[in-house]
Length: 147
Image (cartoon, rainbow, N blue to C red):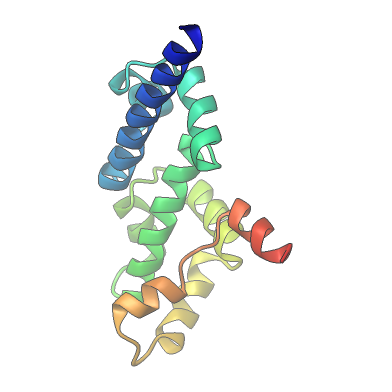
């Protein structure tokens, strides 16, 4: 009986975790923090963080920042916004944190990316450019480097 109920609880948690991930995907540019996400999922912040990392391989904050950086890459490729404008457009409130995280995920600074992206993706449909230039999260990098 307890095995079945713990399995059912795990399934309920996974449904809530998917909703949290969907909310991050949808509202990435809004001010989001783990406490607010946890309240929305009826979980404690600590439980949400642990379970989210177990289910998706990174913390809710890490996932949120990856979404923001992916969107920032797209905006920087367009070339009509400054790095500062892109930072605030994707929901970051600190240019320093944005630049640091961008550099960690992409490998170059946002300004260097902006300079090189226009040339690198010229003539490529935007849907293909998005896939080719998608940042690689740490767990994916480890998995592909080990093969």
